[in-house]
Length: 112
Image (cartoon, rainbow, N blue to C red; front, side, top):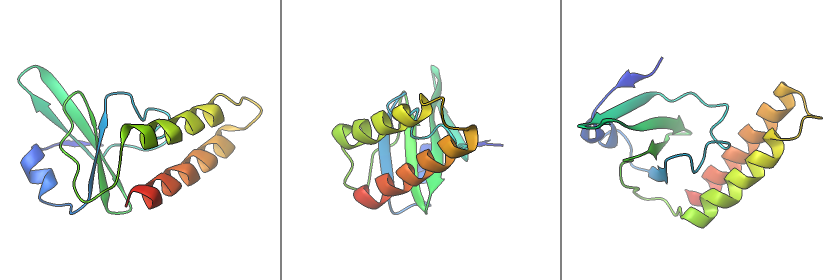
């Protein structure tokens, strides 16, 4: 169950942060559960995922990235690959999850 937090509080806990726009990594993060979320005046702002002690912030208003080498093109490359895996109905759910999780680990290695 994710908890509500502030951007300031969560960013003080992580030295490496990845900023990803809304739905730009929906397939890459498909099998992950967010640990927390933040809101703003208009409502929900972003979700936070802890992957190997790196914070991924994704949403309408994610927190700024820090100490990572992430770009839109890198996120798109990995999310497109994750989508291909997710759309492969010859794979079982467990196989899809295993492959997407491995892809997420590769993504983290590339940007860290």
